[in-house]
Length: 63
Image (cartoon, rainbow, N blue to C red; front, side, top):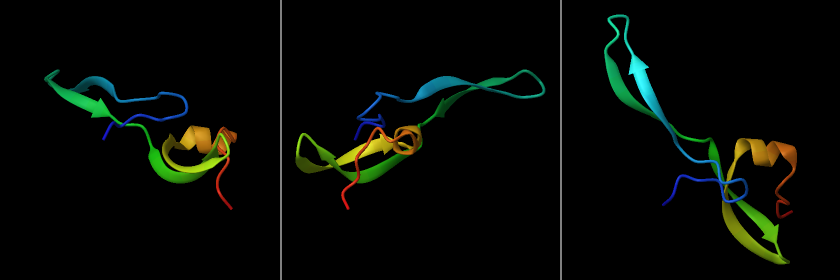
């Protein structure tokens, strides 16, 4: 199960947690994904969509 938005392609971002002592450990930030039933090319499909795509109206949700 890919942690990637099916509309914009937004995926995980990698970096470090940095402590006060400047110790670095690996860190991953995941996008805020939601499973949504949406209309795509005239069909009802279930998509994994990030919150920004939902807010911006890039997805037509099923009524």
